Amino acid sequence: MSSATFGSTTLTARGDDIFVTKLNSDGSVAWAKSCGSSNNDYGYSIATNNSGNVYTTGCFNGSATFGSTTLTSHEGSIFVTKQGTATLPVIITPGTNPNESGPTNGSFTISLNNGRDLLFGGTDNDLLFGNQGNDTLVGDDGKDTLRGGQNDDIAFGDAADDVLYGDQGNDSLCGGDGNDTMSGGNGSIPIVDNGEPDWLCGGKAHDLLFGNEGRDNLNGDEGDDTLYGGKDHDIITGGTGNDWLFGDLGQDQLRGGEGRDFFALARGQGADVILDFTDGNGSALIGVKNSSEILAVLSGVQVSLLGQQDFVWFV
Image (cartoon, rainbow, N blue to C red; front, side):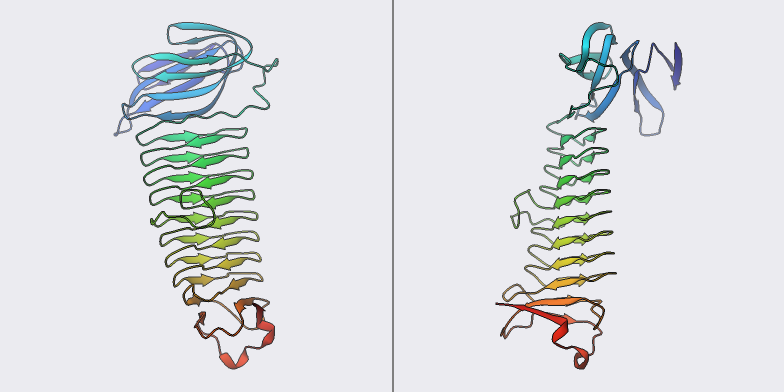
């Protein structure tokens, strides 16, 4: 056995146990709880509610203690506990994995209705819902789906290929590693009513970003990315790689960054400003033939240097 001390509380572990602590606003320890068995235990997700209670989910093998309650698992059961002044098992489901290395095919999720939630997906493919409140969602490993819900949320996809929805509110979405898909609106693609400004960052690999409605800031970062501004006036940056930039509706600011980038223009969607278009660098303007509208303003570009090679037309 080994022990760990959190503030004035010392907890003893029988194996690889799960420790949960709550901190006061000054950084002091409000309480510390543990749960687990004499075997290997795994914590996969954590969230809080408006009352300050902490919900944790994971799996265990053998006999595990949750507060004053001891339960037995035969093949690796999944648990959800509520931790406050006491630790209570809320849900225990029979396991289907006969080894002690943790589930190999499970996905773990905690979804709370209100409040400022903090959700961690951990390994495997997770589905996280923030619902109401200003939430923070971290997918971690696995192909995760994160939905912020109402209010102003922050979502990190981290590793693998993730799907992130900001839903309502002023949201910040960061895909991290992997080929990620992000939508700042309510999740309906391509354009839906939302009206709130969002911040989307693709991170590494090849990402697909939708700003939807609202004055959004989209950054593809690394990789060959595709970015759609949606409605309103957006700021769109491709970053490194060969990117496709669609300003869509509104007077948008487009910056391709490094690589061979394509700027898509169309009639009836507003005049965009392209900030870093350089003749002969492999970038191209995608536009509509015979339009009498101003489709784009090329900042700092000498018009006489532009030629047919800089344009790709479609009807």
